[in-house]
Length: 196
Image (tube, rainbow, N blue to C red; front, side, top):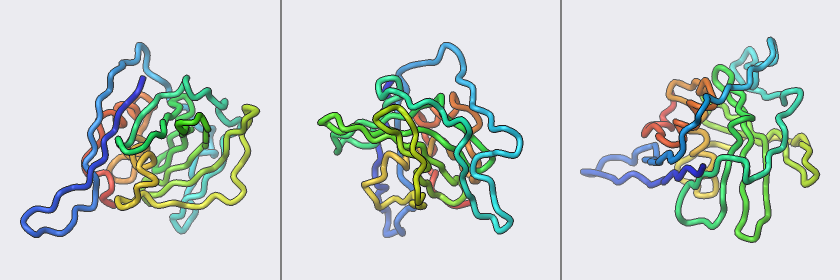
């Protein structure tokens, strides 16, 4: 299955200020025979547990989901201006209350594959890489995970904006199941990036 997500900058009308979100559209061309279950976190190990001051910190699940083959993942494109191919693994989707974790891959036209396990902070409108997929089929934890904002003006992270819109809902909640997440990837909200 491949999902195409088109990201466009909103137009300004009648001298109004710039709109903060993107207009996204997509079409789902494949239906699931059975719903995909969300991977449930063990009690006390919810992904992205909040600290007392409201900050989100991620912990890798134990065990990590298997490193998938790119061709076994769900492909999507974030715009028509890149030759990169993007995909995510719905089987790795681990939702929390206001955060979610998922495997995302990017493959270049020459076949170079970058695979990462990412955490998304739905309320904070940001994401971070938690682990790298190794060529040997293993995960290597990121030594210094850094937050990156989901912003309109950056072309380098359009694929992360598309995934953020699928795993996060308005109000800062994570999407409950992998099946709902894929439906949101195919039919995204228009106001995803409005902070609650």
